[in-house]
Amino acid sequence: MLEKTVEFIKSKVGDFVPEIGIILGSGLGDLADEYCDIAINYSEIPGFEATAVSGHKGRLVFAELNGKKVVMMQGRFHYYEGYSIQKVVFPVKVMKKLGVKTLILTNAAGGVNPSFNPSDLMIITDHINFMGTNPLIGANDNEMGTRFPDMSEVYSSELVEFVQKVGDSIGVDLQEGVYMALTGPSYETPAEVRMARTLGADAVGMSTVPEAIVASWAGMSVIGISCICNSAAGISTVGLTHEDVIRAANIAKSKFKRLITEVIKKIK
Image (cartoon, rainbow, N blue to C red; front, side):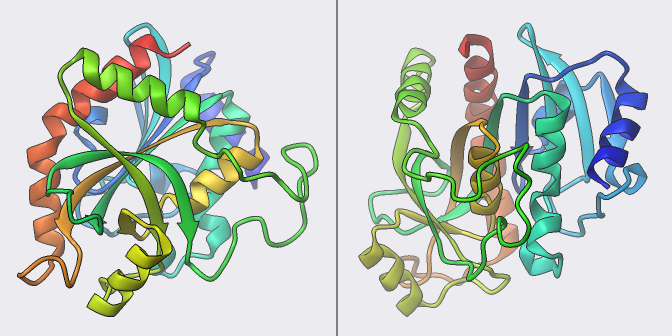
């Protein structure tokens, strides 16, 4: 299926070879609307699934952005939607086959660190996989990656420093921290948030980690950026809703777009 999917996409984009991939999280898909040369609906792509989550359009978008060839997922697949973990990470393998060398992962996340505020942007420095599964379980594709990959620097300190400097150069303040992935779709209980903080998490969410694991395994450089869209349960004094997440992402998306476009411009 992987080869079939790659062949189909190449038939649509011709000799366009993306060097940077971006997975756009909830409420952050506007970047793909603004920069779009070719768009393919997920429903047309063999091996892809539809996404039913609000804030996810479900398109694969190809564009030249600040002199770099980019492919963007306008919405991702989530484990909580009932897809297998292999389906969730399938697009990352497709991006690798298309030529992507650097993957930028974005998400909407709940703030566990009490110093974070809604609409803050956080550079992911490390992650905690608390989803109860791993996308590399099963037969290993030795051509793409090793059986037992090292995960000590999924998000390299060099790239974290680079993104921080880019933020400084354009006046965008960036937090840094550890992202913990849980399955969802329910938000975390106050006790689970206390657990996350005790284990060293600064933000919690329901995505990103499976994709980061596969990208790192496949030899891609990974940049992770979380939009802190709410304070997690037990920190926030009000209830949590997906509408609040989208609202906070909308507030943050202007600085998010400035950051991502500048990162793409300056990345080597």
